[in-house]
Length: 238
Picture: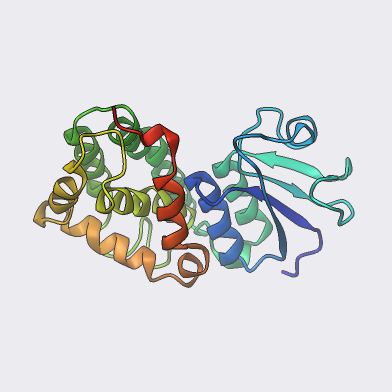
């Protein structure tokens, strides 16, 4: 289906939630405008006219094509990454962000919801809260157990379920490799060695499959990610 309305994507590349939307926009081959929000000093117009909660990502859909800093009141404003993914799945059904089978669609939604409920919690606990590596590893083990023996979350084609997971998984490996986080210095590579071990063989194959997707390759800049996470003030160790 040809796109009839404009899409403006408000984002910042450090954010895994924004990454989800970026992946989906590339996957559906949308025509969209990107605006990078200064997350440390969000402009007043953003919270007043785009997202009153002030978070990213957000999109505007429809209305005249205008400057991102001057959003049209005629456009629809949407926020929350999983909501936007569902919207794009409805807008571009031929792209297959959700399966056509109702059971598989429900499973995809549950999978994405579990990423936020468990994978994110393990990620936050280890990298930001000084909790033990076991909490992260247990969360990833639980996630791994939900995966089928091969392929993606709900079949042979990746869907919004996988796009919800990919940004957190790839950042987990990247931060561990570069020893970034509030845990004791030197612990990251040790945790990564465990994560690359036999216990997580299925997870490692899954991540390799995610990385191989063209839309992932089009949206992931490893060097830029390393640079911005190294400068994250929340990662300063005491």
